[in-house]
Image 1: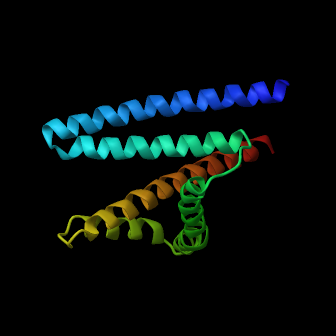
Image 2 (image 1 turned 135 degrees about the horizontal axis):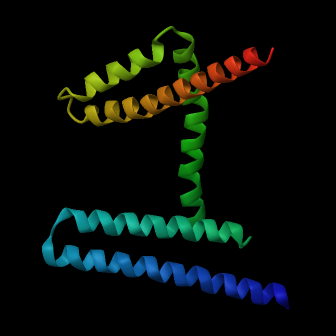
Length: 156
């Protein structure tokens, strides 16, 4: 009896969250209808995507049966995960092995993002930002390992 009441409470919480997100989406759509601005339309689309993502996650946590709509949400995330695993990780590993490979790659992407390349500048800016953050992370880990080697050297 407790599992069915728990499942009922779980569904009620999920529906309450969905109704809150849907309310924000409706408000954004109404703002778009009256202003014909592009930003409220983007906001309503993003709010609906977040609501769909939360609904899928809550269904997964509650171990409910997945609908075809849930699989439409799950599959793009799996595709992104596999793309990062098979394309991004080897490229990062190769760039870290080349002396100054990562900073040069970041610099080239930042430079290409300043050119007018028919929309490709956004792709280069994204690559520069992602690899730039990785470069900062690599520098931070290198600095911490250097500090720990100094601490180990002073103990001996």
